[in-house]
Image (cartoon, rainbow, N blue to C red):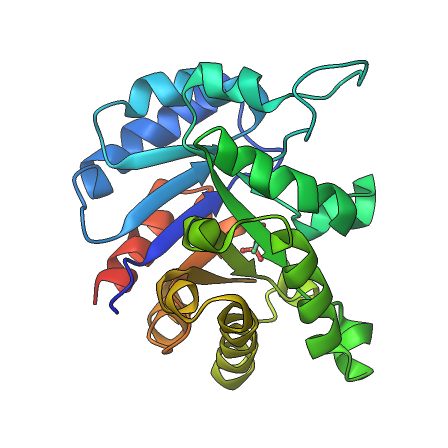
Length: 252
Ligand code: PEP
């Protein structure tokens, strides 16, 4: 099956509403009508409404960067799925390594978040990836197996293909160190095989992104790999021209 490539920019804790609007004005003329690549931006909570409004009618989709699994409750500082749904966001990136490392995100919470998002009609991007020490200790496959199987454990087989998985080696995020094409391909193929253990059809359809220091200069090689269906982009997604160049690389 041919899978539509999916390029998502993750702004992390960058951009005020005014800066977000400026980005949207810059990117819409470049990719606003691209229909052969799915394009998303993962936006801080405070700018979500503005970016949803200013991208409406274009092909740029808006994602949040985290969500709580409960519908509501005494969870000070958290944001629920109905709150995001009300803003009309397209989906949410969950399990980013920065959330796992600095904010205690667990596989157990992700096991609840992913199906809860799907039940609400929102698209999850589930991030998985090993640290440098885990790679050096030859634990990469164990980590990917644990994070992927746990994150998808309560997703029905029929819904698996609605999840996007982002393979992001932690040592490559924001460091300028990029996985070699062989490392990226091997990890993404391994993740696809894990999905195939559940459903061959879902494994064929699910999108697996590579993330970790993707730039316009290295995007074509990474996006051309057989099991890499797109990219999750941090630093290079802060500038509209550079994110647009990565989207163009995904079209080739
Ligand atoms: C990310 O934030 O998910 C990421 C991959 O960042 P960068 O592209 O800057 O490495």
